[in-house]
Structures are given as C-alpha cells and as structure tokens.
Length: 175
Image 1 (cartoon, rainbow, N blue to C red):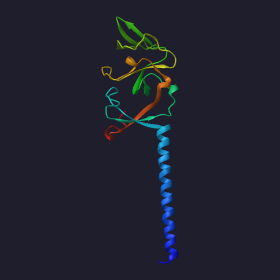
Image 2: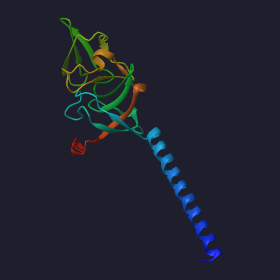
Image 3: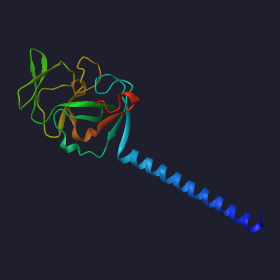
Image 4: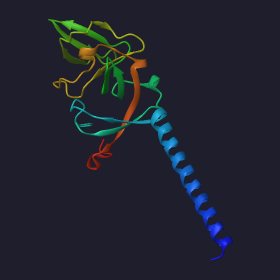
C-alpha cells in the first residue's frame, strides 16, 4: 500500500467515526426531547386501576394531549400532593358530592347515578367547580390514593393521558 492510500484510509476512518458520533448524539438528543415534551414512561405501583393497568406494568403517557378536553370516564395521569397517579375521571364540573347518614356519594349531574365514596377525610361536600375533577381508582376497595383522600384535582395537576402498556410484552395493547 502506498503512503497516499494509507492517508486516505485514515481520513475515511476519521470521517466515519465523526459521522457515527454525530448520529449517536442526534439520536440521544431526539430521545431526550421526546421524553421531556412528548412521551413519558410510568411504572404502575399498585392494582388500583386493575384490570386496565396492574402492578408492575410500564405505561407510556402522552404529554401532548389537550387536557382541557377531559370528560367523565377518561383515564388521566396527574401529579397531586407528591403522588403521581393514573386514575379515572369519575366526577366533572357540576357533579355533586353529597353526604347522607355520614356517607359521601358522588352524584352524576346528568344522570343522577351515584357512587358510594365512604367517608374520605379531605372530601368536602358540594358541587364540583369549573376546572376541577374527581379522580377514582377502578378498585374502590384498594387503599391507593385518589380524590377520596386527596380531594378534588385541578386541571393544572393533570399531566398527560396514559396509553399502552409497554412492559410486560404479554399485556401490550390489551385495553
């Protein structure tokens, strides 16, 4: 091999390494930006939302969803009082938290349907105001935190909408 061809090979190798590292840095930057602004992964720590999400699931949550369009029955990801929760919206603006015989009920303003809540400590009675939600676990007997103990959840506390289970693979796309 001539001196000139050795020099060309070295230059090609350096250029290839440079391109490799630029691609690697670009991929890392893209991953960080996606994680910060679009999708977050959440580890589910309880069976409060069973069967949709169970303890041990890793769930993707979409942070770009417009949380002003949340309605009764939607499942949301919220940060409240030091807790990060995946819970279902059970009460919306206009619904009533009623107390009868020492027991609290959530009353749907449209249908009159009631959900027996028990006697939550931080749960005041009255109409749910604009910009507030009542979030519940799907398993009401579970001791997981929800609005029964945390009170009403403000719209600003809702971060995202959870999507598919990413792990374990056997539970992917089951809901």
